[in-house]
Length: 78
Length: 278
Image (cartoon, rainbow over all chains, first blue to last red; front, side, top):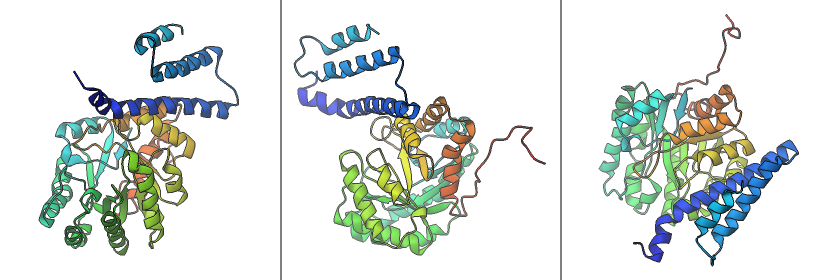
């Protein structure tokens, strides 16, 4: 089993990469909206909103339960 | 599709990588001098390394129909020994005369120390005096923005031709000043520590394709030469034509590297039977 510092040290770069990919997706969406002059479909907007809520759940320092469980339940709504 | 891999540390990779690259369209690689994972102590160690990448490695690549070119440099991580750097630099002209050496690289900064800056200046100065191309490494992760600014400051104080200088490993926070100053900018694709294929294509969409080189480096650490092909796929799946992809992943390397006449691979254009003129 890893110690708390080991958990952070072991997975920091990988998590940094994953968060950058999500940020790039959000930037890509904004750029597409700007290019096309229109927003996404209702379904696309719903998915995007779920992603935003998911990020908040993942970043919650004191969740009521496991974050992964909450996220999987959230993703099941779209 | 024909692809050129402009930054590839071949000696750290297997022949199987060459074989798979050849099967996936790679026609040429260019190998900058790299850090060995430890600080070398003797000039002779560098000389033998330069012989390996300028004499032996082309023969290994040729077995798979891939052209191999290279660059010479003392890596910024080894710049804290100025005497060693000076001794190695004295040998550069003999390598500039070799048929596959394209210039000086990768020089640059790692922690942006005084010795690193002096080494960078000496490398660039020597390259300019000998009419060589230059490939500049910018730092990783937390040091990147500061180190890139420092590189630009150093170059601004020198008599250089920006068209002949490629500043590598740019990311979203460093690409604009590099392009604005007239240099070529390189995107280096890594599994987690540098740019990703998707983010590279985002930058191509935002900044255009002029003076951009995309590479996947590939060295002895966690890396993957085929991220370059993944980037081609990502570019095409966003609606770009085959010719547009060729412009980025084949013709741009031809345009930059071809400033050295030793790199004689020419830009290509896709034509259909009815567009070919006699």
